[in-house]
Amino acid sequence: MTLKQLPSSKIFEQLDQFQPTLERWRFKGYRLVFTNGCFDVLHAGHIHLLSSAKGFGDKLIVGLNSDDSVRALKGPSRPINHTLDRATLLASLIFVDAVIVFEEATPLKLIEYVQPQVLVKGGDYQLQDIVGADTVLHNGGKVEIVPFKQGYSSTSIIDKGAK
Image 1 (cartoon, rainbow, N blue to C red):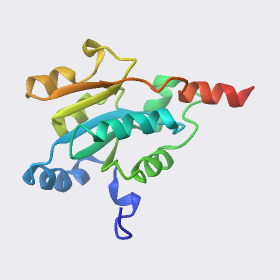
Image 2 (image 1 turned 180 degrees about the horizontal axis):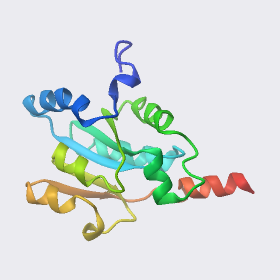
Image 3 (image 1 turned 180 degrees about the vertical axis):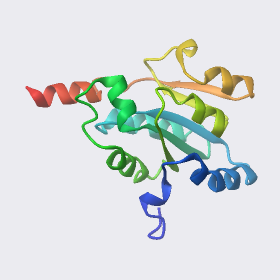
């Protein structure tokens, strides 16, 4: 990341904001990798997933659940960190090229829009349970499942802090 490229320049809250960047990457022939999550309390397990995901292509696009989306998935006490804070942390990572916030319960609409060549999820998923896998595979792409880094989860970190 250069001084000119502040983390906020990698954060997109609307798909139309991301369109010019996506078109430029496609024109240049970059292999697009997509993963998604809440990334509520960023930890070493997330870093392992994201750095591994970047290894599957040229540009790593992270779909980030909005606060409302996290609440719907995790309950009323979540997220711990708000959307912009989570997006800023993710965008600050050198191997993350774009962070796109989504409001829906799943990132399917975003995956269909981005049309990544590689879809990456963490080791707790089975191929048939990965949202968007059929779309990526149908378009000739790949789905990669990165093994979990044992002992790390946002929920366990939050629970540990509550004790």
